[in-house]
Image (cartoon, rainbow, N blue to C red; front, side, top):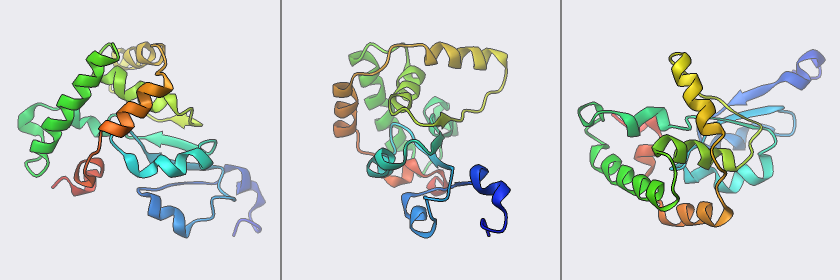
Length: 163
């Protein structure tokens, strides 16, 4: 297909949901691979090192699940979300981050992906993101500690399994 459509060659990318999806695509011909990646999503850790120059990440804030009112968290994952929020807040204090959004955003920023996609609702939300973008970078030892101590079930990291 791409040989017949050379104009697409340098613009062709794909959005995937899990590392297993990489098994059926040819990452050599793709310019961009969009993945869900965040502090909780350990599934991508091995892959991101070899492909990070092609990766654009989404779901940095895991669709906002940690910012929801308790009554809006799906019942199926509510107990685990509560535990994870507690762990995230522990790291916010330990690493002197501004708040949970700072920790979540800058965790992803540490990996130096090709790009990060974040939806915004208004101008204030956009300004808030620039604030987090300009916060201090994580140190490697901090990232390693988070990765070691924060193990999350796939029920939380995959929103398709929330209900």
